[in-house]
Length: 379
Ligand code: COS
Image (cartoon, rainbow, N blue to C red):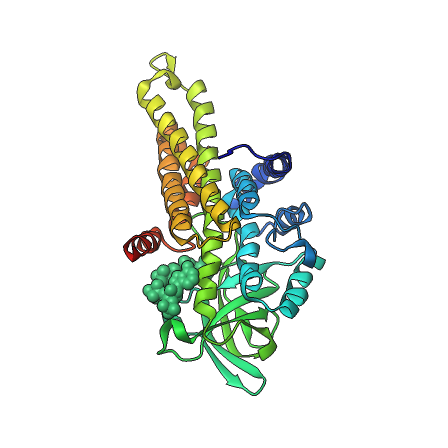
């Protein structure tokens, strides 16, 4: 077992770290306040090869491994998880094409996504089907050589800014997972309308919206895989995209620890820096220990993905553990900062708000536990 990174991985990590420190962190609070989408900065991340990393070189992409992607993601998220969610959502949106696209579809759409800067969104959740994917209702009715899409998606990251959606539909609302079919859908097709940007508690730089599909005619050539294969495409996608969510959470947690260490060394109480008090030291020690565990689980699940194994259980370990840890760690960071931590003058309240979303998106942590338990009980 070798825990050492290769020289290429170190260089990649360094590129992402410098980008996060110089381009993201200095403006993160400003975008958090305004809720604007930082398009130029996201584009620069793409230009550096830090976004859409799952596209292989045969289609013009950088073709990073899942481990490489996790290394980048942790660094970017140290700068701001809202920016990083927008960057990583491109890979989430592209992954169904990587997994299930025909060679012709890959050439067309992955090639298109590398030819110039494009934003992508993964459209799975609906107002009445978040955790229960098999219950989704967006209807795709066959009409000659087209499908006609009607329904609504919600909580779509990059929803308002995406050029392309991967959309999960049903052809029969009663047939649960067996009726689900996936499509590649250009976002400018007639009948697609975008709701307002959600006014979120955290990760406010990322653009999250409702998307309505009203008689949207999608050519049959844009169907991914066969009719009825959409559910498994979605599940296989999430198996691969949950490790980077672990990395995103680890980045938030690492930032909270860095801020806490600096503050604890400086802030005095009873005549001494609070870093000298065991009550604070124990919190710092727990933070560091949990960050290390989160990173190891994350990289292990990414390694399994890279080795072609079905990584459902380990991806859920990583997503669930790292995001719960980030919530605890950012809450403790606010505690270490005391009253100051509860104000926007200091960076830790934003980290705590940002961390909360991590326990909810890409499958709530209750769903992760359900996936883990089912895998265990399979025997
Ligand atoms: N890879 C491949 N196939 C999978 C799979 C996976 N990871 N997980 C399930 N399947 C298959 C099952 O083997 C089963 O196949 P058969 O019909 O051939 O037996 C089929 O898919 C249905 O699986 P299951 O019965 O487990 O489906 P459920 O409806 O019970 O739902 C959960 C499973 C809850 C795990 C799923 O709905 C889920 O992941 N929900 C959370 C969604 C989510 O993360 N949303 C976030 C928004 S996207 S950012």
